[in-house]
Image: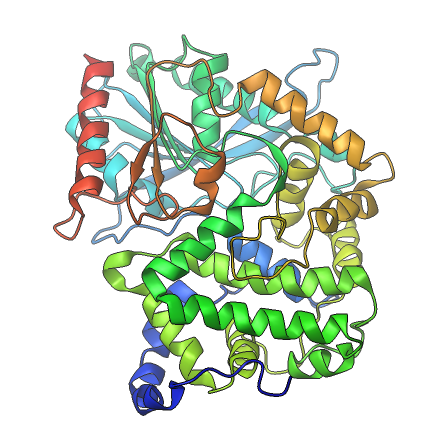
Length: 496
C-alpha cells in the first residue's frame, strides 16, 4: 500500500510548481478558509471551521464607491406567535436610499445565516435594478445571526425562538413599520435572497402573498432532507469538469488510501500523515467520520463560490497536485494549507460537541451554532457520503450530524424526531415544488445545493452558488447574462 496513492506522469507537472506557488496569494480569497471570530478560552475545532466556510455569506460584490447606508434597529417580538410573550429585541436592518424617490419600490434583500454587510446593498445586480426604479434597498439581518441576537444564552430552551417562521414574521414587521412612514406608504415591495435567504424569499411570497409583489431567489434550497447525499456528487462533478479528471482521481485516490488505513488497523499512521492532534482517537468511529467529512467540506467550500472564468477549481487543483507527487501527502498538505494551521488539526468529534456546548453559554460571534440548530430542528441538509458518485469516500454518514444534534441540543433530538421535523418543513412549504407565483428561481449547474432546489428553476451551466448576484459583466456566459436579463424584465413586470 505504500505506493497506493501515487500517480504516473506527475513528475512532468512538477516543473510548473514555481508558477503554481505564485498563485497561492491570489488564490487565497477563493480557496482557503476565512478567518473565523475566535475565543481566547476555547479553540475553534477544525471541523467547525470548515462548516463556517461552507455556510458563509455570499461573496461581497466589487464596489467602486461607498454609498450612504443607514443602519436602523427595529423592535421585534421575541415570539411573533404568542401574544402573551411581551419580550422584545432589536433587529439590525441596513437601508440604502441613495436613489430613492418617495413612493418608489422597496427592494428587500434578506440576510441568511451570516452577518449582513452594507456592501451587499451598494453594488450588484439587485442594486442595479433598484437604481433603475429609484428604489430603496433594505437589507434585513436574520434573528440569531450577526448583531441580531434576540436572547442569550443560546441554550436549547432559548433557541426555540429561532426558526424560519419567526424570521419571516420579523421581515413582515419591518415592511409594516417602513410603510407607516409617508415616503414608503405607497411603495411596492420586491424581495431577493441567496441560498437559505433565497428559500426565505420563496416562502415569504408563499405565506404572505399580499405583502410582496414578486421575488428573485438565487440558489434557493427548498427540499428539507436529513441525508443530503447528492450534495457531494455535484461537488465532485464540479471538480471533474472544471479541475480535470486528474484532480478528481487524486482526491479519490488519497481518500481511498486513508480509508484503507483506518479499515485495516493502521489508523495511527493515517493520524500522523493527516497531522491530527493527539486527542484524535483513530479507533473512534465518530472521529473517523468527522475527519473525512472535514476533508470533503474543504473541497466543497472551495467549489461553492467558484467562478469558471477565474479558473478557481483548475488553479486549486494545480496547487493540490504540485504540493506533493504522492496523492495522500498532497491531500494532507492541502488540508493544512486550507485550514491555515501551523500545528496539528483539532478534529476530534467530542471536542466539536464540547465547543458547541461552550458557545451555547459563551456566545463569541461564531454563527454556526445557530445554523446547526436550524438544520437539526427544521432542514437537515446533512451532507453525507452515502452517494457513491463522488471522490470523497464513504466514511461520513448523516448519522455524524444527527448524533451531534442529540449530543449538543439534548436527548429529544433522536433520529426519528429530526426526520419528523424535516417532513413537517416540507409539508408546510411544499418541498421542491412550492405553490408560489411571481418568484424567479435560478441555480448554478455545478452548485451542490441545486440538488434540493426547485424543479422549475433556471439552470446556469457551470454556475456555482448564488452565481448570478453580480452586475451584468462582459465576462458573463450567454446563459448567465440571459438569467440576469430575465430578472430585470420580471421586476419591471411586477412593478408595472
